[in-house]
Image (cartoon, rainbow, N blue to C red):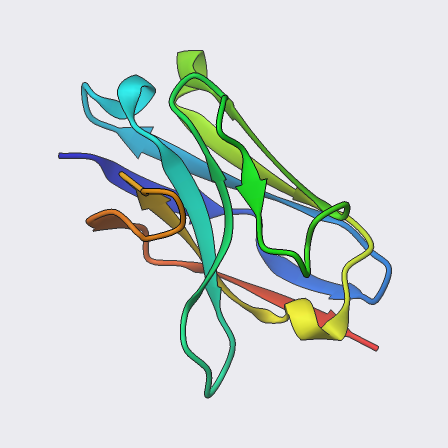
Length: 119
């Protein structure tokens, strides 16, 4: 069992930056692959980024590659998503996910954090 909670969302103008954090709880967090997903209003939830338990196996959806960076600090039980050069189409609720496969979500989700990018 892994519990996760996101923070760091907010409202920015296009071209701005935000850093999302996902704090996990549970003995297995440091051995769990983690990911970020997002869901825009009226659209299905989509994969954004993933990172292996040992920081290997990093991958991104093509639309954020080169702008977003995923990382983790197992000593702090935290996964980060650094988002730069944000675009209005990045507006969504962002969810942290624990136990992710390649891009398929694992069973544990956080409640989500809203990111709004204005043009």
